[in-house]
Image 1 (tube, rainbow, N blue to C red):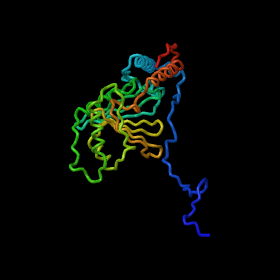
Image 2: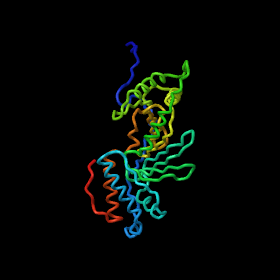
Image 3: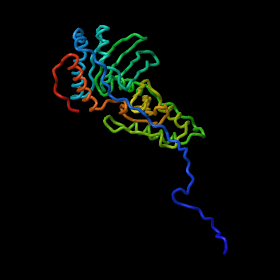
Image 4: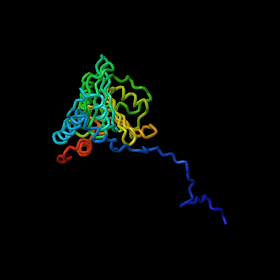
Length: 297
């Protein structure tokens, strides 16, 4: 009997060697959710009429935003330190923060912090470290962020790319054609145009060339929801760099968005309606304000 000329290879479960050292990317482990701020007792609030006024005006501002859109501001100017501390206690600190850096030729810096009520923002303007204005702004996102991004785009001239491109560049030129075409054609109200660089064959040099061409603006936004999302406006019209990180600060999604404002930075209509309801409950507790009609999302 002759030997079988073809080696027999076993198959089926357990027949193949397995590598047990699987290396999966670490995904975000925690998520920020609404936590009611520690509220003062009604007796403590009763002596602070200006703080009560600000909270009532903020509730009315939220109602107007829910029904009419846009943003509404409630100034904090003139509040005593005690009244301001009480307002701060009720508002708390939410998951989105932002800064508008001063322009190169000087100017003011703006600091933005969302409260625990999504869509209610603390907006503070500073000049050389001195507070110029301080307010609570109700809306999907503070208007100053949109205005600063628009001003950056108006002053931006896209720098030329090296000619010829370096040998290590893979697809930067083709990706930039898509990004710049989308920026020219995008209109307010249209769906965002998202270029997902994570899924494209790009080298680190490609990323550098893209960032060089689209530019970097003065608006910096950090959303600490499920992991971190860092948003920077580009110099390119309607352009934004949106990068998501896991809890180990490793990039898990790297995108260029063409839109007026990335959705990750905005409070949704449902969030605004929910904030109106929650703030109304808080006011009923601390100031015994009569219940107002519910606001539809």
